[in-house]
Image (cartoon, rainbow, N blue to C red):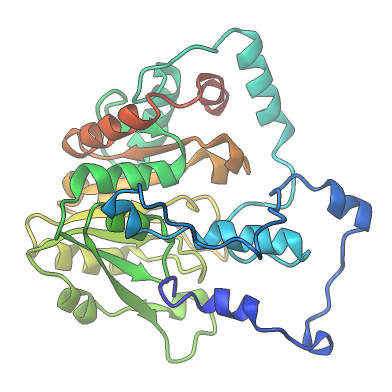
Length: 331
């Protein structure tokens, strides 16, 4: 979906205004005052500039299509079905927690893997959910948002000529990082003859198995899934785990940033809780998605020390640490 840029092409095709679905429009003054995403007025005229001084690896990458969608939606006052941020304010108690942290002088560097107060809170949260004691100092890494966790994982674990398999449709962050590392991205689509509900989307395990080989380093899974809303059941995750375990060097990067957005009596499940999977899974979460504060850029990864340590080292080299007052507020 991302590679074909279907939605991008749709934006470029002009539609008859009479065919457009009706919706309530914000007053002009409100639109002008919006600060959700500052549209770039030069977007339409801007080319995809590639500097002759850029590295060969950088030349393999493309700008994020989601940033482009957000600029276009703000420019044309359109419904944004691209980037996952809310159009309503974050909770007041979260704002107050950040203000209090700043006033209490939590304004210096924290440890690169996360402030002690936050990682202890996260360990207490995920120990019962994972059914095992999570070590706050070795099995949790706090980073600059879930995107940074995905990027850091790819840089830490993937070599040139490795392969990264992504369940389609997928967020473009792993592909951008894989391109940068000289790896190949392969998509395996969710399929449905007719989807009346999100649960009707199915990952064909034979198709997944056929996409994997000894060169596959990462399987990128997203549950709850964006954009379909698919919530993988425990049985489905156990089926995926059995396929993964056929490949000794394969690691699962499980994007679970929408863990708190589950409805209709469904329950979010962690693939890391399947037998033998904690040791080979990096589970990624987002404070920004949980508290509707995507601009904070606070995310975290949970997994075995052997996988979290190299991820944190990449984060340390690029950002060193995540903003301390926002970590304290999150805790």
